[in-house]
Image (cartoon, rainbow, N blue to C red; front, top):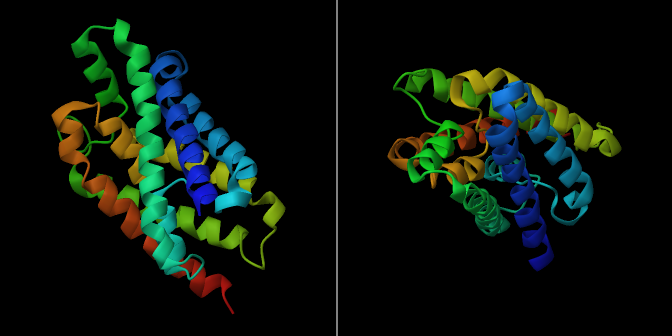
Length: 223
């Protein structure tokens, strides 16, 4: 199982690195489209690169959704989730170090800007929770569909990557697009009190959505 956990670590590291890199350095110039494309491309690349080793979850909500769909052993879920969170946090640490040249307050404000939050000057809790649940559920429906016996497995990473791009284009204006508790945890750790105070929602909503999507996928695609 060591190789599987290593693959999840590397894949989630790449995903969070794409979030941090695109959002911190590209978004001010080209907007959140660059962030969405970067995340989709990262998942696409990692799904082809290490997906054959671990299944290419890179996301606690995906792991929980696949357990609900009967596609993944429940006993492996916790080690996978730990590897995903550690991989995401490692990527955030790297980018925090890269930003050491900025004033301390600037670093915290920068990571807050790419963290997932609700309320304040943004959308309220219900709106954020709803979009996270719905988008994650749809993500799992796609994943379970393209990886089922009725799907085209060779094209699964492409479909999954493009779906993630679409999800981020829709959800970034509302919630900064989590659909991944490991990603939210990684950026919240360096985003200050507001980001940490909102983090619970970005564990609960994506996992609930993932389980719903996994159950829908099971009903659709399993004989």
